Length: 287
Image 1: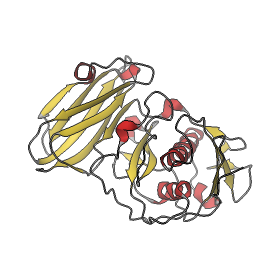
Image 2: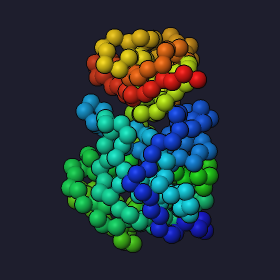
Image 3: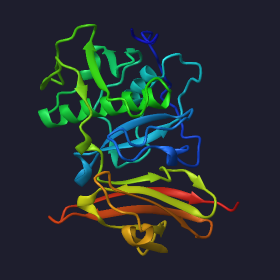
């Protein structure tokens, strides 16, 4: 029996990030492909595709909904994913905006999303079409957990309908006839989780991120805006002393810096020389 979430949801294109940090994200489980969603927050998790060397990976931002009385948080997350611009200019969306979405959530973990065909207006390669579908799957499963509709440990699949129909070639490239599960390999292997783009922080500034084992040779940096050299930096594994696992190394580092504008960056390189980095502009203010 599906939970009562078959209504349409909508969100304003002007949602803003109202918090100075990703809200209570430290409580999120790190050891499953549902990592980062075990949080209670009024903000909505939205996933984006990366750009450049990060173009094959997904990243997440918490966004503040434009309407607080929306009865369907999963539909609202989808609308935000298709209509909002990422805060981070290094992220992108692969979808065309829609204003209403039908959803339902079953206790067994099946999330049904009914989208209008206009959401698939872009013509994408098979690779980008798969990434776009994963962007949807990550977003709606995160929204369902954050809203308390599903447990973080519940295996989740997303059934995609288009104008109520179950068979469709998404973006002209990929058939979506079966429910879709998360592909854990698409979450960025190097991820600056917090602070988020454009936020303000008191002191000390806390740098919070995750690095997967293949990119274990990683560093964090806090760089004054407009300069090249970091004011503070360190090696991720040396700073945390945390054991590396298949879920990656989670690090949380308090950094004492004076008030000002900074770029916080986490960068890692794998054995093949591939470099992945995630950086966010932030402002540190006096407490």
